[in-house]
Image 1: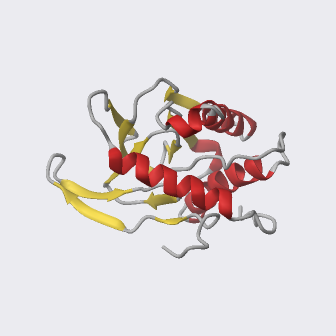
Image 2: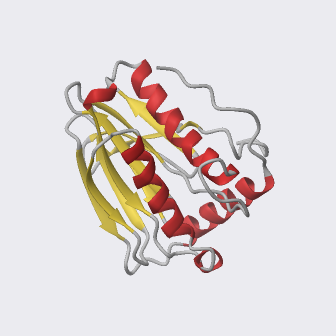
Length: 203
């Protein structure tokens, strides 16, 4: 990942074979997303970040993102923070539409926004991320059919786009240093980089 990648959402590349579920899988890290038409598993671990698992319920194709809003002194829908959130969502939605999803058939399941990082608790990052993703989906008229947001625990989310099934595990007893290090690095990248230009929409 390059140093200037803060505002460039990109497809996750961490593929592996999941022996528990006996299928191909992809791990989605902070600032990444993944879209697939294949019968496979998408996995992410969330702290303060949120994920939207979105699928076309008729065609059984779907995708997942993993993002947080960068801190911003501005507020409202035109703030750099909200623009980045909208960008992270549009990248996922546009890719879904490109592979054949119909907007009218989309449904979402959303997770995350926990108070996990002490440095982010003050700024209510988890709450802002959770509120943003729900508001965004309501504006886009994409129904949220399941959600598990806020609380104080990290979450591991398993999403099967073909069936729409999601399994979520709260990591109550895990001291997840890797998760915290990843989210801190992602937060620092977002703070350092600026949102440049407008988001180009397709579909």
